[in-house]
Length: 264
Ligand SMILES: C[S@@+](CC[C@H](N)C(=O)[O-])C[C@H]1O[C@@H](n2cnc3c(N)ncnc32)[C@H](O)[C@@H]1O
Image (cartoon, rainbow, N blue to C red):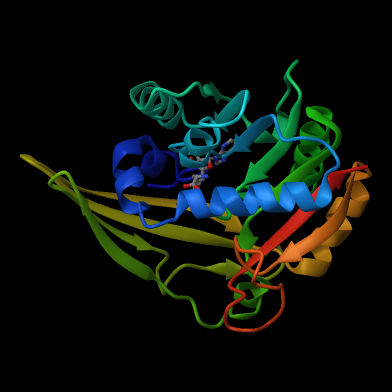
């Protein structure tokens, strides 16, 4: 099944949450707070995450911040995140909206886009429109931190790979295959048609879902050029992982590209 942003896959929000339950969310939030402290002169009170999915970082941030918003284009993810926040007893405003054209009356100190959700911004126009809409809802000096694929992946086009893993929680088993060796990469658009396969076993409910959507990868220099072209942000730092101890370079430990943008 072909989709725009793997929406069939993300509609199984609970299974996504189980399959991706390997991140150290509190540690990643401390990283975001440390970077904010380093680069912003203001105090961190408000936080917004785009492509938030189950909104785990929002739930963690909402324990200490005054205002937290999770934005996702999947209605199922939005409902799932809202329920999860209610069960956790924290206040997170969950909104089903497109991050490309996002508008709000609210203002935030820190915005984030994690887990390579930037890959769903397929064109340069979409990236610039998104950056301008994020800048509009940030307070002066506010930061935008993105966790993107490392550019190593752009230059590994002859080695199309599949990542496979299996997770189990509360008796529910979820097995993911992200990507397939037969996925096609277009070096002109830098877009891969990424196949996903999810097998789940949830009591009597057993099934397999297949989904395929375009995802774009970025080099560091082109992303810097897009930020400059947006005219609304400057890049003040780069990291190679969601950790202040990992510089952005070609070392093995640097497996992500994490640019830190400050509103101009
Ligand atoms: C890889 S998941 C990341 C979820 C979460 N941030 C995490 O760290 O686990 C990507 C998310 O981006 C959402 N998404 C894709 N395109 C979007 C768009 N244009 N606007 C808002 N959300 C979008 C998907 O629905 C999905 O929940």
